[in-house]
Length: 120
Image (cartoon, rainbow, N blue to C red; front, top):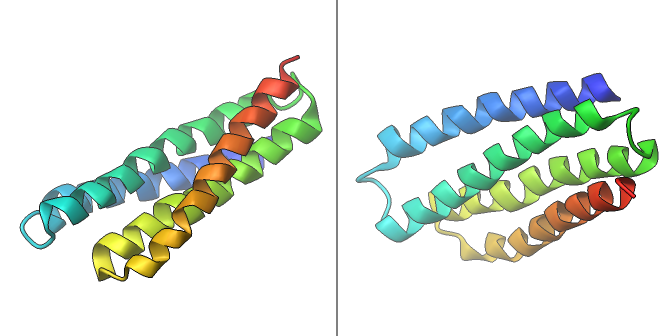
């Protein structure tokens, strides 16, 4: 599983950097400042949790495997749901997708909680 989370984290990092560059260079002037800020928030949390996935992989075997494994999948779900919903809202203006964002935020929180509990 550790290789899985390194792979997911690395791919998430590649996508996050690409989306960050796209936002900085391709969306400036095309989106309102508010929607650009929404997009940038998605990228920021995307990158934080890409790094968290790689860190999670490094912790496999050192902490409770079930909890670390759960943390990795929760971080993955959080990137898709939290950041993904923010990307959709910013790019389409369809605000109903914003209802998904808190679910992704809860996945991030649960992932961090799993790591905290695993450390005991």
